[in-house]
Length: 101
Image (tube, rainbow, N blue to C red; front, side, top):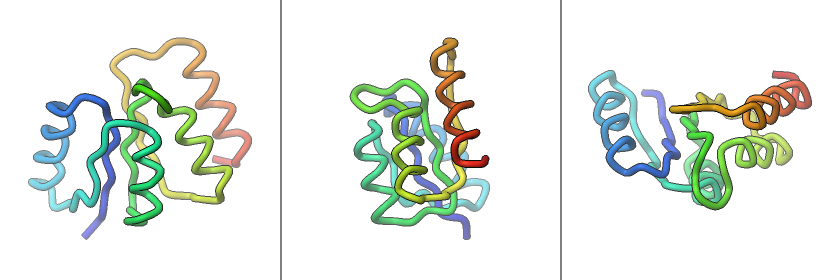
């Protein structure tokens, strides 16, 4: 079974993603609402996949991804966004280049 952590600040959305993943045979081992809690959940559960929202209060998705990669964590990440501005795209791209993704 594939273990997943979901990080999105909208509880209703997270619950919907959880239900869809459960129905597809994935196991949600963490469901959190901000980047700092996502970092802790990844460290604690060592998921196979992290689903990460770009815009969250506090530490956003790009900063969370940068922190993970700087710490040597190579968990595959799926980025979620309802809208993306240029700064977020540049941040994701530079993080991917910096860490060879």
